[in-house]
Length: 165
Image (cartoon, rainbow, N blue to C red; front, side, top):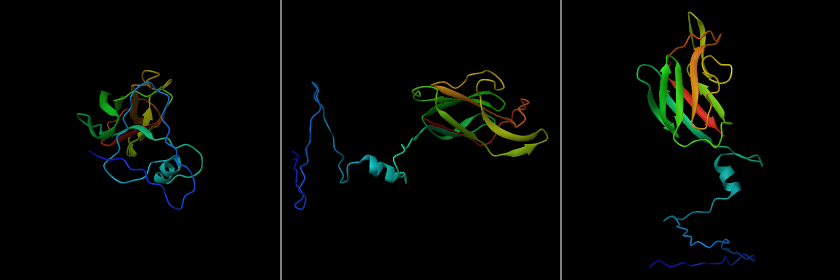
């Protein structure tokens, strides 16, 4: 049987109090089988090389995929699949839903120029080419088209989408 030992620091004068929450349920706290330090807000900020009191918001979903031929995810986090809606038009489906649709979307793909002009990655939304309002808690629709927005769509070999909330 393992033992639990609490040791005070000989040079410290403060009191360390461990308080139980007000609960009627039994709880188990399982410690890792390794030495370490408990994370604090300050130590977490340091891990992100951040300073100050502004909060740090992590990426909630991301994907790197091939949009040519059969769409294929190379790597992802919280993305279950990509739906190919047609040339240059994709829906990114989340494994776990966002808390609401008020997240920030970053899309990119290698920039290149065609006979129709420069091409860029875009997010579908109200007023975009195609259906409006396609940013939901479970998916986001993105496209790769010419900068002029004349609905000339292209399949990129490399497409990147990141969601922050």
